[in-house]
Length: 416
Image 1 (cartoon, rainbow, N blue to C red):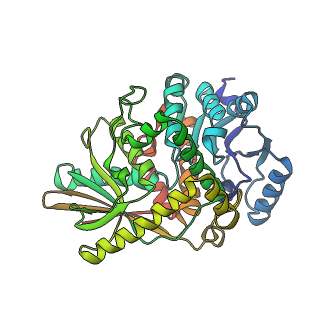
Image 2: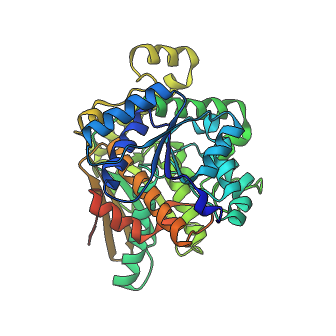
């Protein structure tokens, strides 16, 4: 019997009892009901795992009961065991710089397919540098950023590029991601990941350089010691001539832009070696647009200062920010939504890809995104068509993920 045939679980959901993990588990159980797929729920507390399983099975009577696995992410032996037992590991357990290192290393060693929700760029860079060659040798496909960070950005840019070439015979000179109407929020786990990166950057110059370099995740730059600052991280309002509107940077662009540029590099630089890609929040064209941009930027800057300070962060944590294990009301009530427009421009040509869903972006829609990524990784593991190494959503899955997400309610559309 081959090693692959000995795997006990098809997909193991690590961090299943957390806020995001429970939403992912609910979606996956419903999505795979009636299919020959063995799911496992993994976490630190067997009692909480059993309570989650019982609640899910009660609400989804047609779904098979998932297996339960007690897992200590800080114990290399524990993560090694789960990697050997699973074809695919899907993890929502952050902060990843604390809880993800052993799991990524184990999956890379044992040829286990892996997907997560991290937006912790310095940690991603370290994982690629340490484990990419091992993953390529073992046949493991490791895909970070499989949620709202950074699936809409990565697949949206891929579609812009493909549609631009098909319709106009060329590539866009510039691409802009514009955040549209959105309702959602953050969980305590997301806040912990954010503050962890802030603290790491405060004490480590190399982390600050990674955060400020738009190409810090591209193969040529990783480990080179060469860094280049990116204008989008200056954060100030600016009049964007591509859009013809006043803009401020979209804060998640600090992650998404790097993922998009890594995808471009892995594809052989179809957009060139320095693509003009930015993610923004856009306002009007005239003076009122400038005033609104400045006002919103001031609010975001003030929050950044408050969350960076240890005392003010504790006060925010006590009275404002969600506690660990808690999340936004929009996710609980399933009342969130989002839309983003990703526009490519070249001379007189303009094409926009829209990405939208009737769920909050960070949890409801994200659960769909990472679950469909995990199912595609399972298909690849079963057929032996894995693209090994550290991939991006676009490089690992391409158009097939777009089709899966469209069918699941995360909609991609094209407008001229």
